[in-house]
Length: 141
Image (cartoon, rainbow, N blue to C red; front, side, top):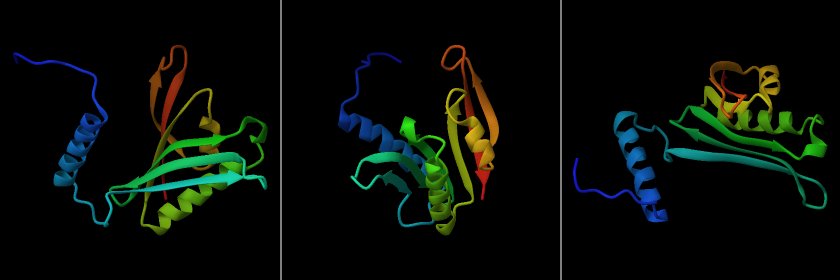
């Protein structure tokens, strides 16, 4: 390899790279639904409209859900909001034909919460961040 530059990507170049891998993936594993991925995102608000908790997830390959973020405002943790949100996206994903959910969480976050909801650890990244662990978890539904 000769004569090349490495630069920070523009937004358009980011999209080019992202679309390139999606196109490649489609050539190997064709999607069976109209859209290659579907966002399943929910938020719980109080009566004033303030967000108390939320979940962001993506259904892809028609049968796999990735939970990207599950967040509950600190003063509302341990009140069941996380369970309500997780159950809601699991129900929607199942209705759409999903049979596998995966996510990751750190040792200082919610591993035990997910274990309680039937998830299992399938991988651990040690010392990420330093002196902590990142857990990769899955659940068959």
